[in-house]
Amino acid sequence: MNNPRDWPEPIVRVQSLSDSGIYKIPDRYVKPPTERPISLHTNDVNIPIIDFEGLFNDESTSLVEQISEACRNWGFFQVVNHGVPTELMDQARQVWREFFHQPMEMKQSYANSPKTYEGYGSRLGVEKAAILDWSDYYFLHYLPCSLKDQKKWPALPLYLREVIEEYSKQVVNFGGRLMKVLSANLGLREDYLQDAFGGNDIGACLRVNFYPKCPQPDLTLGLSPHSDPGGLTILLPDQHVAGLQVRRNGDWITVKPASHAFIVNIGDQIQVLSNAIYKSVEHRVIVNSEEERVSLAFFYNPRGDLMIEPAKELVTPHNPPLYPPMTFNEYRLYIRTKGPQGKSQLGKSQKSSR
Image (tube, rainbow, N blue to C red; front, side, top):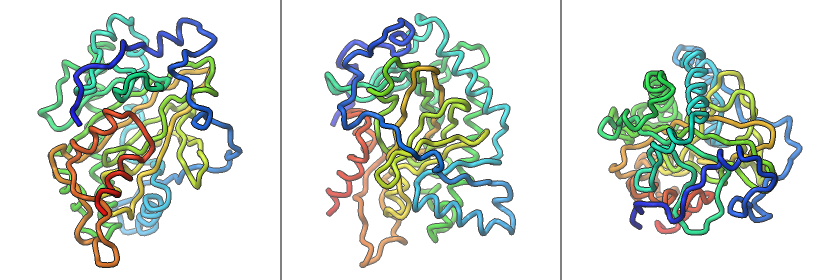
């Protein structure tokens, strides 16, 4: 499966469609009836919210257990008191909102291609005539340093590069602390997962999602159902407009973001390393007709060329390895080619190992 160099069709910016005042969305965005969002009465349900204050002191046993349960049973949780300054979180959201409201000519100068996805984009996957999602995005690399190129980061707003540099540094630090807890909860040495990701030489990237107002939100999705192909996702959600939904027992639960919380979810690579003790879970994004949304998904990933496989300490004759060894570069090529398609890639890997 080769990485294509260009999109199969001309790119249409969803924000331009929304701003044009259309009353009906183009057919390219209309999902099949079985994939359209439906309203569920789940107002009293939310993903776990975990307060990280005191995580590394002697009183943290209960907190560690909460994290373990969330990783095993939900695959998602919110984190408050995580150590990243709230002012920085607000600034990061704001600079990207301002970017998406820059003139289209400026944004187009950062237009991306499917070769690396880096830059300003409006689709995932390169299948011709595919049904598309109602969103635009910006994708950039932070780590490893060999892939980081600030010239590919937007020059406007003027303070965007400075803010995102500091924000990314803080989120990587938070991700490293969280990885220690996830390792220990598996009965592994606390640096096991970090070392499997490459130690200090991990991959880290940011996808900023922009979901414009949609005249027919009941017919489409901002992002189709998928599990994240990487390691950990640390999401800074829109503080005022909900949209993320998590699959739970066959239903879709709309996440209600806590104030200045990160939403953390397990990615496929940690499901593989844990031999499915930790679960990556399908999620999707709904849109609405009243308000736009901005969210920042920070992906804390293995280095692309490292082989990822179940930890040998977690494999026994009664619990054989569920997945074959595969590099992250090989793994993520699937979603970059096919687009978001549930957990089909992880299932494909599991099947091929049997």
